[in-house]
Image 1 (cartoon, rainbow, N blue to C red):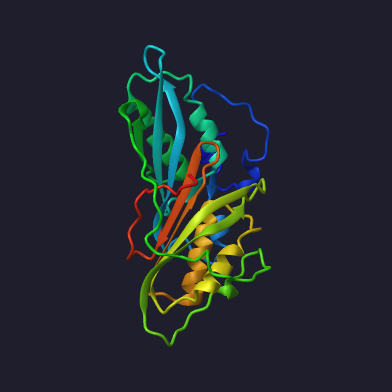
Image 2: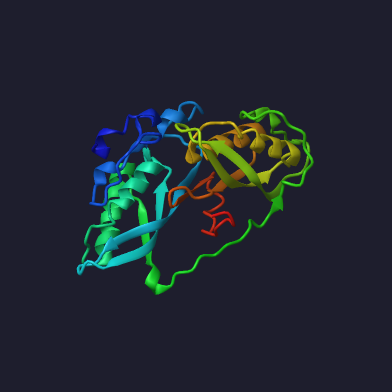
Amino acid sequence: MNPSDTHDHGAEASPLGQSVVYRDSYAPELLFPIARQIKRDELGLAPDTLPFVGEDLWNAYELSWLNSRGKPVAAIGTFRVPVSSPRLIESKSLKLYLNSFNQHRFVDPTLVHDTLTRDLSGAAGAPVAVSIEILSRRPTRVFGYPHGVLLDEIDIEIDTYQTDPAFLQTDFSADEVSETLYSHLLKSNCLVTGQPDWGTVVVRYIGPPIDRAGLLRYIVSFRSHNEFHEQCVERIFCDVLRRCAPRHLAVWARYTRRGGLDINPFRSTGHFTQFDNVAEVRQ
């Protein structure tokens, strides 16, 4: 399937949940783009007036190819897909695509970088920034926690496990605050397979104070919700923006890896810049 021919397809046509044969010969046609606007229409978002900027940051831990002499090279890849791209890339298709490098010979790592950049940008419909770190050069990873207030010890009672924006409450009579709130209790399900997705979500804002217990209930209410990572973060961003009316807002989630990939969507009104690629302990 040519990625350029699938931009109007939804998740139901993706390879998720289907039996596939893993290919180890280079196959860019394995990439399966999905139109972002399909789910953005549910949120009432027009393509030319998005309320956020940002990107989807992917970390790929199972990237390998053969050098010109047939010797394997192992590496870590980082891919940054802009939110302005008309398409996201379905994660299983990206895993299959990366596996197709396994027995392919590249005379130089620069060719791997250029190939990834060309193929991923073509699938997304916008320039994708690619970086590659070869393991023999001893790259390192930084693990840490958000600099903010952890919500998870708040003693809430809840029996709602489908998203409910009504949990979001704000004291509009109070003075404006600037704070970062986060939770490790974000859990949603894959839109196609229903498999659980686990993540840490960060909400950073400047505006009237958001009720912390209500925000935690709202995050927990995603527990049985079916949506892709990118779509969940956009839903959180839009619900907080509409219900709580912060002057500035950023929402950032780090999801645990699946199939050698983790996905970390970031959305911001523009005041807050992209957070550092600091790994969550479960990644």
